[in-house]
Length: 312
Ligand code: SD4
Image (cartoon, rainbow, N blue to C red; front, side, top):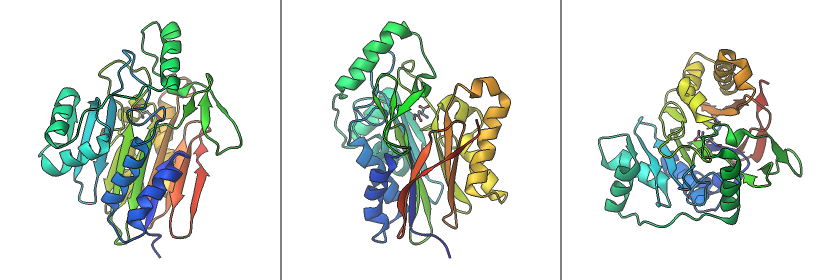
């Protein structure tokens, strides 16, 4: 039997996101509404890596990336969006109201304002401000692309939130995919992107086929980690294509991770990328370059965090 409805999302912060998505999935709602609701719920919180409370870029500006894709391959995305609280909902409007897929920067903000969103300042939390000031000392205003992949300390067991070495909590990018009771798949991603990135840098998260891909015939996948590496291999599209070839979600994620690692093993050791996937049977799996990637799952019978296997 097909395991549905079901929602899976990146990281342990996915537990709360799944709960928000489940309010829709559990009452017969559509997967596209569920993934948007899940993304909204974490955009409402202040954490290092999603929403207006996220870490800024190297100029101290918080810029947000998000995308959404539904069972008809409709998709919408925003990148480099400033001062808008719910980039995922702007992405959905791009999907529903425009002939385009991706709006960026000022244009994305203008579109949001035209469609009823209001401008509000980013919330540079004390943690974010301290981390930024700290980074400015060392970073010397140069991009440090692996900043989110610094060794992290874990406190309180394998599923407790991880922390950067300076003690700031690490919730990371939120990517989620869901299958509703009718068997339709959708996915969403929302993030403030890599901390201290060059202003204007866009990661994998809002790029369809990189940070998110949904094929309602086959399955769906999302990613977290160093976006440049995911873009380079069209990561989530690759994962879905591996599932099309018959690989399980976990094996499909593993083969995509191998694609990154085999290209440059030495470099891969300094990076983290994790993929998370679901197929049309509601089977799910994940794989990462390094230890530490976890995902959250919610179904009628399950509500838990699962550790991804890792290659290195
Ligand atoms: C990016 N993939 O902007 C995102 C960052 C991320 O956990 O996933 N952080 O490249």
